[in-house]
Image 1 (cartoon, helix red, strand yellow):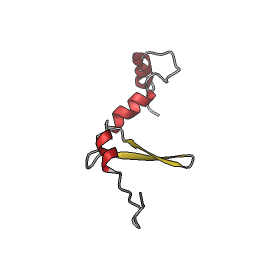
Image 2 (cartoon, rainbow, N blue to C red):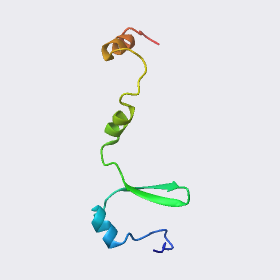
Image 3 (cartoon, rainbow, N blue to C red):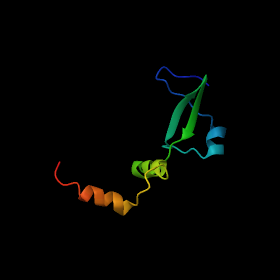
Length: 77
């Protein structure tokens, strides 16, 4: 493979076919040591990705209703 003057690389057809990479498939590029790793980008909307990432990470033993009650009872700032 060769990088063009515009920084583009062509993924060989056999690899695209094997992984089901079609035109307009979004990919993410990461550096791992001396390697460049391409992975299929998460196609879920950003809000869903954030919720999935944060789900189960809270360490406050409060229910959602208790947290909302705090915001409602806060009054003017």
